[in-house]
Image 1 (cartoon, rainbow over the protein chains, first blue to last red):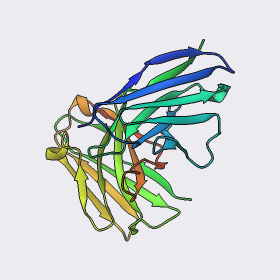
Image 2 (cartoon, rainbow over the protein chains, first blue to last red):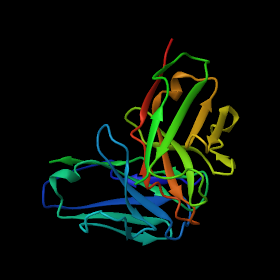
Image 3 (cartoon, each protein chain N blue to C red):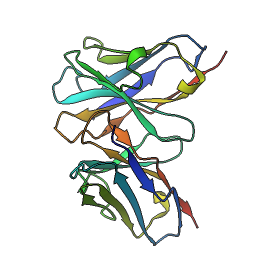
Length: 107
Length: 122
């Protein structure tokens, strides 16, 4: 199975900040990664697919980058509704696997 | 707009079998465009992919659960289901049904149900 390691596990931030979350795969997965946002008590929401493609309806302050084994989710200009948990997922092979999550918290 | 809704018991006794159903609305489950899947999330933890079923009935399960897992699909009812046997406390989780497109290497979940909490306890 491909292991996905996210860091940090939590990040304190303020409204307006730039936040960067990283995800490292245990092997080369090209650009086959997706990113999700999850708020308490809710299902995850797809933000980014194929490393850098913004899902329809997702604000442009979210962006993704990376290839190979290292990937980044960036939030430019954090908004109040962005305080949530974020997960990466590899879409390279089955079984599909997720990172452990990063919680963006109010500083 | 495709919508998914899980249903099933919130409480299961140890060693029993969990049965969950996902009802799809806003579109047909009998399509080659999507895989129908289950994902679970242990309390306060990350996400675990359980398996998928295709409209044809073809399945692929997570090897970690394969020996206890059966998925089925009912195209006439627009539903798909999960059965997980020999439940233990380690299976306590929120269970989501979700779907991802049949596009190679774009196996990202773009539609989710709201999730249902399943607790294993006597």
